[in-house]
Length: 363
Image (cartoon, rainbow, N blue to C red; front, side, top):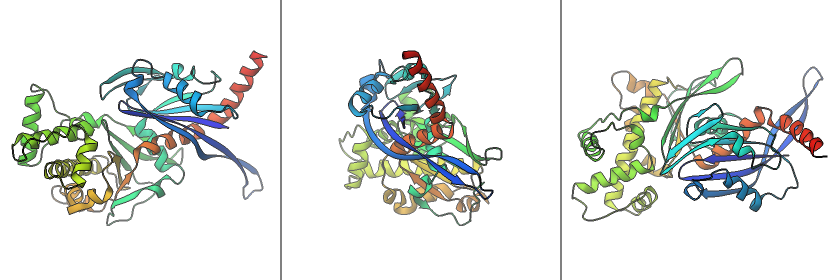
């Protein structure tokens, strides 16, 4: 039994197949209970989304032709989408790609057309990857808060990649687990804290013809490039032109002064907004960040992130000092989380029945 999972974003998308296992357990009353369990990653492949901008579902067709041997049935599919999901559809508008996606079109690419297919927001998928199963054990700790958290405390999730995602995870008493509340907080107005950040805002307002500047325009891969261009515009570093986030990070790690200053400013703004989320969501259970591939050691350097995270007015500095910050690797965790969601939502049982019915119709 196999689940198809995916991460769909404007920059890079990835698809994967995960196998599934069923475990029979006996409870204290002697009754048998069947537990659906996520198995191993069977196959995966990354795609440049721009190559499929006119027909993103074709990505599934190409993936299955190259990676799926057909020996086990695909019982369902779930995709973490870097966009709001409403009424079984989502519109990606990111990194030069704009496309409206429909669950039914994705389902048509599967060997059996009646199996369950679901879109979830990528922030929800990340949360399912962390908070269901043992996903939290895979994380790295950036800052250890000075207070113990309760399993039922709220968590805040922050994804900085091609855009900026923010979500709250709260304890759902009915489900007896953490559940998500998504947001569009990344599109809130950027609030500068220092003279240099005020100058950055003025620079971006001029570039954008005085349009609003959101946090997403700064805390994202394109935003890091904008910060680098802003610092370059001061004329202090000569004529350099790093034009993508990956190059800026790599050159920063190699000691390039322009890129180091740009990355330090980026990390400081990131830490401050992560601290805002801790306050906004009362996230005593921790703030979870990830996405852009900055090594944790660099995030720790000089306490730039942590100082900005805790630099709040009055007693709220002490409040944030009690909250931990953990780092996740965004790419794989979206697909793991989408698969966990599918299993928890009963896709295996539903898919098995759907395949049986479809085979009967074909006979």
